[in-house]
Image (tube, rainbow, N blue to C red; front, side, top):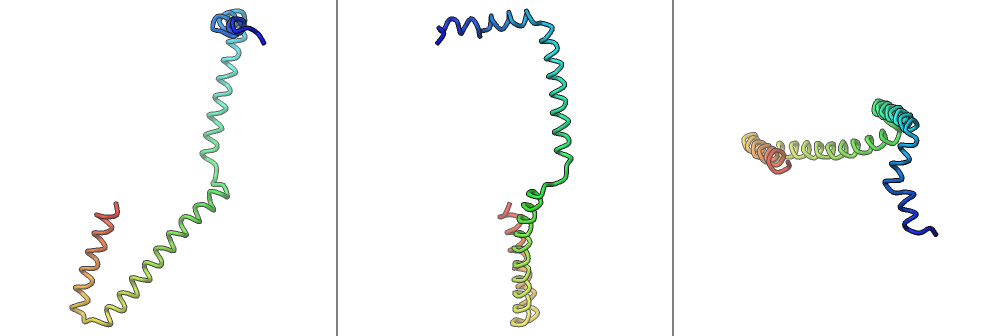
Amino acid sequence: RPKRERGVVSQGKLARALHQKAVGASVAASTDAQAIKDEKIIKAKARRSKRMRTVRETRDAIRYYSGWAMVLLVYIVCLLVLLIIASQKIGPDSFRIFMLTFGTTVMMAWVIVEP
């Protein structure tokens, strides 16, 4: 195992500075290579952002939206059943009042409570 001082001399800031001074031309070439590499990475990211959805992303979107579609479908069916039953059991005036109060409470829940 080398001594600590040898490691500092061979890998420290002074050693790196001397190495860069000795190979100055290759450093400039490596910065050009790095710029080309960076440009390729940027182009690859742009291609990835423009590509079509993968099968997994499509499947995940279908799962997400089908769940919400099912919830909304059940909600709409429940509302329709409620409206049919309420319109048959109570008279037109009572049904109108019922619809106004029900609509008001639903809108308050969606606009005030939900957000």
